[in-house]
Length: 116
Image 1: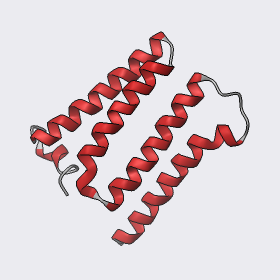
Image 2: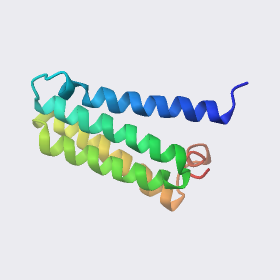
Image 3: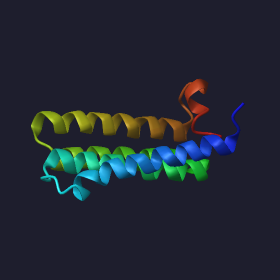
Image 4: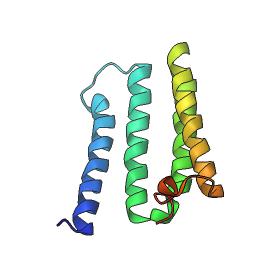
């Protein structure tokens, strides 16, 4: 049976892998396009957010809220028309879930992930 420390270690490894995956195009000197820039922002953001949530679970709702804002704004500001609207919708859905979690209006099966 795996213990909690093992899951935290695997979570840290996942977060670091996401951060490295996000900055890898810059380290490999690939041409930096808008798609690469948005992908890097989102991967690094998710990696840092996961690291914060692992060590401070009470911040889950706030991190989720700001993650939704960053995804929506990065997608809208950097990407071209059809793709930016997709990220705006995803960001708004994440923001709505975070707000509903603050108000405790989500089903208990989902709410358990926000209140640990």
